[in-house]
Length: 276
Length: 276
Image 1 (cartoon, one colour):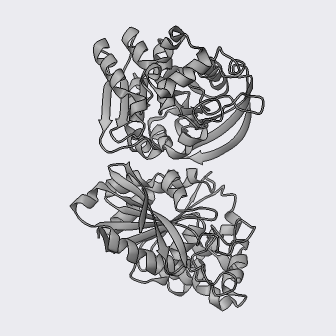
Image 2: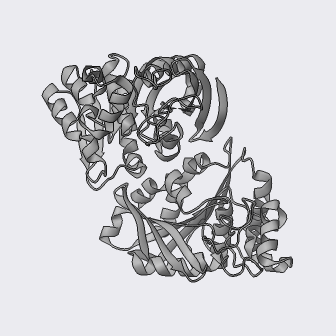
Image 3: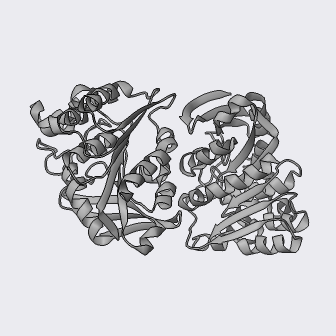
């Protein structure tokens, strides 16, 4: 693991690190914010998964999460959204290939050799940061935006016991039923939709739910709301009797101005679960 | 004036607007955050001037100011840092020409026709926003980062009675005495240093000071601190017996992680002055 940068930030340190990833068979870069509280012992971890076209950097720079995480004594991890590098398959479209890993393990060519973002976020990166930083890996929570909200929801439900709480900003809720999903799941996982089921938050919610609290915010003026399909997750949460809060925020769109506006709520929500 | 974008943000609206500037003889773009409080009447205004290489966008996206401004009911204005466009003179260096207007009215060729950022920020843009938005132009304050800190300090002292308070993040304090300054002031204003004096915050502080409170933060690990020369401003403030607070923040560098870390303090500082 190599340090690319470390900046003092809200009394803690915002670092950027790179490492050779086995899961993705390429070098991967991630951001990690460590609050000042780490000086007194291992701190809990909040994962932030980003959306289409993003890297590790977007949320780290634009979401305003570090101030709230510093106040609560929580570390933040910002993984990249796909494998990277010259040898990695890509597509001309912004929503497939690099910057669009969708947090799955691809089984189809040409994606299978590198596009293993589920394993990367679920297994490899937790191992790496747990071994290299003073983090309490028994206390983890997860959030994300858009495609990253999809990733947060599906990882939280797919890894029972791993995360104490899950939240999302404008998540893709039903990729099997929308153009933000069908195209990518077909490309990465093949045409057989049975392989998609565990990557559809609404379906997994209906099947298994999440053993902990849930918070989801979506803007009523989100320009992509027809692709996000919050109604499918809302009905699944209600059918499941899932503990949770789904909020439609009047006037907000899909941008980081929306994410930043509700970041304090999300960090406070996770802090409560992580303290328990 | 044309609206380029408007995003809901912390209960208010983050807008980006463009207009034909007389002062700069080109189209100019600026950001304006209006808090929800504007619905109840005109709100006070905090100007944020950006640094080298920045546009109107950097602080708007990375400084995390809107949340605090929303809480205090203050509007934020984010001007660009230089004239723009194909017909505008430029230089290969990052620190001269576009993105590096230094908040002066250039008198030398090839800069004189467009590089009139003092007039733009001091006269034209206040007139435009005062006429088009519900702003209380009797209550203004100003801050900035690096070159923008230099601009905030020199404008605040150069326009007595205009601003109730002034602050800066890692400002260029003594451009007459450092490479961030001598090169640009020579280019824009000519070799006669008497024309530079009103654009050197340390000199103006020693001569006239500021009729109100002052707050300046600089990181002890700022990688440009030898160019900023905070010691010249510190001694001028002390010699002048200027009401003010100069803080050296341990471990912080020149980045927006530093700016964001202390933004709450600066907005609160200005809010107190603007309420009076």
